[in-house]
Image (cartoon, rainbow, N blue to C red; front, side):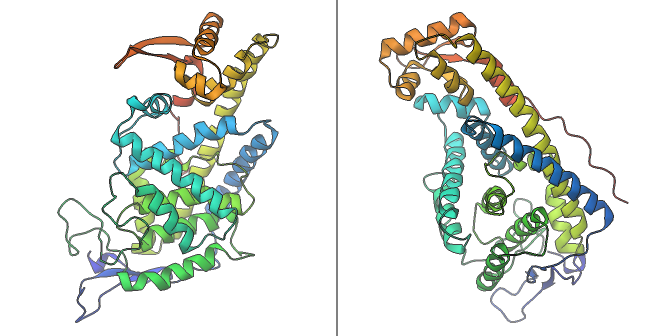
Length: 394
């Protein structure tokens, strides 16, 4: 890490400890500022993001069963956040593995660990403040049994790490996080910041600062980015801004990966917090707007299907709810979810076929397992984002 690339700012500085066993330049973050002066372009971005997030939160309170949307959106977040770290799995891979265990893979397992970790974070944060204990438990769940399991799941790192190209050294790395013996004090300040009862910063700016500082501390050998992104939705729920996890920011971060990394690094190198906040707030606006539009399409499909089977006395209306949650079906998945017999599940799927809700994808694997797909639902879930360019900065 080249110290000449870094200024000494209110957020930190490049330092070196002569004579230390780790005598190389690294970044030393300072305590998180509790107040910031926001320029007009950031204030405008904050206003837009607040409005968009309010629309998304409002939509979730109007839906009779928000879980219809929570599952699909959590999967989008888990997939995108995992892909940022190099995991190769698609939405189709994940959905099919949920209804057919034999369709899984190592990459899908990593995404499912992310979903497990997210669920744990929400359950723990309902009972506890967001503390180091919570983070360690969530991290252990994230890495247990998958790639990175050898990187001490559930434990803060005891050795230095650095970020850069393959084969980089501390001297050639883009970024060298604080040394292990500095992590404890930094996380204590981070923990206090996150749990302040009446923070002076707006909630979205507070979340952006939380994420920046966590990524900068880099407390784990692996999984830092995924934990840091996972915590954004948890913070928004804790602060009363989003009752359900319907904001999938990682989709924006993945699509703008270089800008994401550059904005974080810009704070470290130049103290450029404004560009990071502007980037983060624009991501919130884009993803919240997409969440609202995608939700309305899914709800429209569900209501249309419901109307067509409203007079049906079988479990077909329940099957409609099932395919909105996961558009892939097998006889076994329908059996388990609706608690019907094998023949009952087959009958329901055939009736859904007759209605045009699902179509067969054929048989796969040993035993000729047949899979069906609700194409209309899947198309909404998988539709790519069409991002607007962020407004140019003055």
